[in-house]
Length: 204
Length: 200
Image (cartoon, rainbow over all chains, first blue to last red; front, top):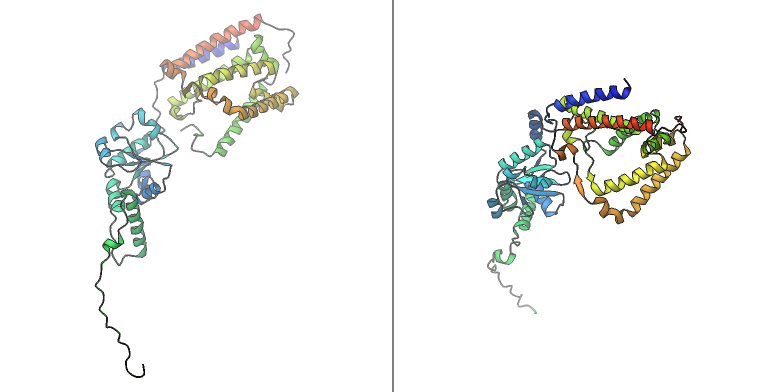
């Protein structure tokens, strides 16, 4: 027998075995539970409301906001520039170009963090990259950016600086004008002063 | 878990280093198998020597079986392996140009480098020509872009198009290759050229 026939027989028998093998799952992409837990502990996937406000105000082109609530909620209110991918449609092939890509940071958000965390875990397990969530969700967004809490008078100057930044951000997002000085100004009655009387007499 | 070098997880430099090491091995084996001889490569076209067909098909089959078995053993993940993307028009045009270059020059890009490395003057000219071609293509790319990018099919596998499992396709390809090798050997006898030396 010549070499060609021997090799052909070996190859065909190996091929027959290959044809009989079951299709194995490709599992290396899926994270093990402990890996996922480690990732969750590190919290690197959370973007705080302040960070997001900064990114939005600077019109950072590298982020894409994804609203994972349903379309009714989305229609009522959504963050500027956000697109709506309800959680149950997240894995539809239609959305794959948004969710499964490596060029942009996707930031999932929902009212709290339940839906967005679910979206994050799903995409993380499949092995999609660049997915983040808005820490605290829209609730936190409202309480920190849209209606920032007025700090105590004795608060350190950093707190005041943060408050002012948030207040400015709030004005950026809500479109409200700066408080009008004239309207709010308290008009105090003029302090009665004694009329100065000229020094009289003498040789004036 | 494979692949050894996941595309996005290593820096470009490390990627190129791996490519360099694998490339050295590839070049060495090509040279040792006698592929730096343009007689051997032209023989494929005239039918008196089908070593090229045998080597490349055997390499493809070995790689294919390796991937299937390693995947079965859970050592490699077929879903994250890079699959070359398929542009129909540029594949056809590129195939014609490559085939013509093959028979005119007597080398394919890889073998031209191995032949140049062992000091063949014609191979050095071939390499210079390839580099000139690369520059020319780069310069006129804007003119060619619409042809180059047309009929994009994405990263497809034949087994996916046919809708069969990778294993079945592998068996099919091996049978086809075995038949091709047999016909090739018949052709070698028919188009035998005593005047062409087997010497490198």
